[in-house]
Image 1 (tube, rainbow, N blue to C red):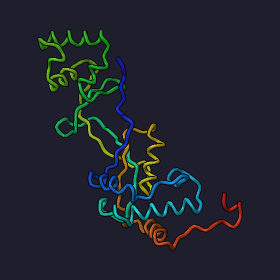
Image 2 (tube, rainbow, N blue to C red):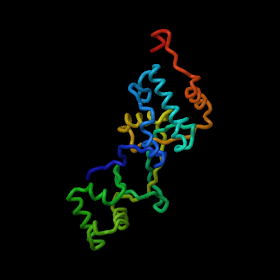
Image 3 (cartoon, one colour):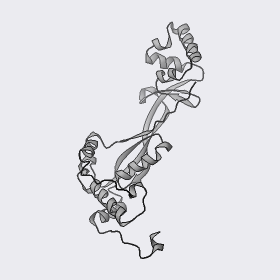
Image 4 (cartoon, rainbow, N blue to C red):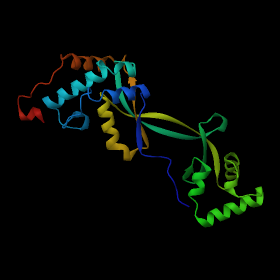
Length: 223
């Protein structure tokens, strides 16, 4: 039997359909992520700082603020975590557990069986239910699998966990692109940092131009 994974690569921006639509419609107005860019790990220079300040202003003091509902925005990369063991009536869904493997539908479970295992399962169902496994409805398939030796059918719920936090959306997206292989399903989510006073003070100083990049006086300081 093949062992499938609970994780799938990918990410989604979760600011909502209106926000995603605004980003798409304003793509010509949104400052492009220049190369090199602080968002992708480039060194701090006058060019990369200027690019960063423009992007920061766009997301925290520009036209998209009304869509993510806060000027005190912090862009977080979040990973979806799934936990098991819930009462099925209070869960998002059901899952079939066997040793280190899991399947979220009986069909996924069936597809992972080889021909011999399918024949064995069908014979069991035929003997006890008078029909083949695939002829049962999904509820009865879950019930039957939960009765098999070493199998557990239980409820699952999911939550989103912050992995990293960023000043701009582009930096959060770049993190996800770079690290997607280390995590499961990822998304960008906007958190409100209104009461993070140090964070907001530094951000406002950059946006207003009071905090600026100054060329170092020596190569030692530039390192």
